[in-house]
Amino acid sequence: MQNRAEVHVDLGAIAHNVAQLKKISGVPILAVLKADAYGHGLIPVARCVLDAGAQWLGVALLDEASAIRSAGIDAPIIAWLVPPGSDFTSAISQNIDLGVASILSYKQISAAARTLGKKARIHIEVDTGMTRGGFLDEWDSFLNILEVDHDDVEVIGIFSHFARADEPGEKQNAAQLKSFVEASDDLNRIGIEPQIHHLSNSAATLIDASAHFDLVRTGIAMYGLSPDPQTLGSSEKLSLKPAMSVRAKLHLVKSVLANTPVGYGATEMTSCDTKLGVVAMGYADGIPRIARKAGVFVDGKRAPIIGRISMDQFVVDLGPNSAAQSGDWVLVFGPGEQGEYTADDWGAASSSINYEIVTRIAQRVPRIYTSHEK
Ligand SMILES: *Cc1c(COP(=O)(O)O)cnc(C)c1O
Image 1 (cartoon, helix red, strand yellow):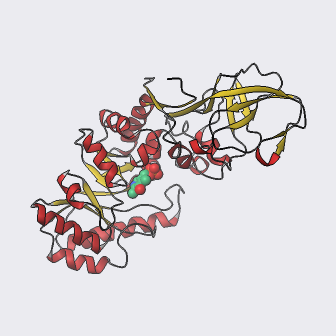
Image 2 (cartoon, protein in one colour):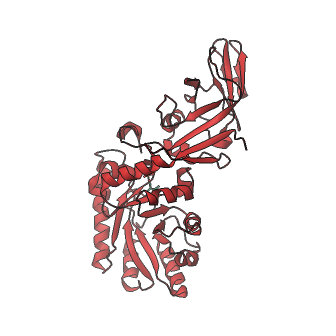
Image 3 (cartoon, helix red, strand yellow):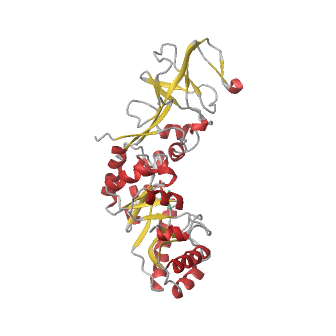
């Protein structure tokens, strides 16, 4: 089949990043594989990171964890976005560790475990200041319940999540760390001693050794992207290699005169006689419609977007002297080595972040795996 657009995933880059994060942290790595491994492809990335030395896997959804088990992967895995009413029986029987953040889900998990006759492996999530997941108002009541009723569970871990780890020196990080230690002490006081304390995301793994504890949960950095290029520096500065490149075909190249309106709403006009390229990707493929100052790399240079992004296509200004032709491949984004736009550039051009760019590249764009060992 001839594709009109492709995602290229460099598994060698992911392996390099895992090794780099292991070196920096000095503790075991939990590879975060939610959202189809941030758009890179769940199963190929799961195999890659385990080969590269990650010891744990983490996902948001039970379905994501089940898909990993169905592929025959038996590494320890946590699913942490598992609301009450989820199929806890299936999770426990598949040896999927569960994040627990409410009394209701704890009760349901315990009941499912009792019925199965198999202990549920749980990680208790505490809200240390992000005010999203984790126990907060129910904490004291939960401790009372847990103290007298924990025969159906094995408390493997306690964890929390930073709100501002990408801001070095931010006071909230120290406050969250302190609160995390206090919550761990609360558990110890009722006789519960989890083996694994985990708090760090990519940003904390990269810059805050005091938050590494027994395991770090790395997502974005493992895919070679900086958690925040503004505050933490680029991938290159962090010695990370971006793994995802997206390329698409020029559906068409056409010559147009100056002052020609382009696209829906005629929001932009050509500034001179020029050649336009119609790129065969659009917002249905995850190209953000709001993106302004991005474009593609073709014929050795950047060609900026002109006019609105459509559902399946967008137009770029190739310049009057471009040698690009209908059917040529263009690079939408890549590691940046040749001067192409990066996921960081697309994030900035969309008032968003690199995370959103890579995770939203649609499933209708095929993933192609390469392994450039460098
Ligand atoms: C997504 C997520 C991570 C990974 O965050 P990155 O910034 O991508 O490293 C870690 N922990 C939890 C609980 C998450 O939801």
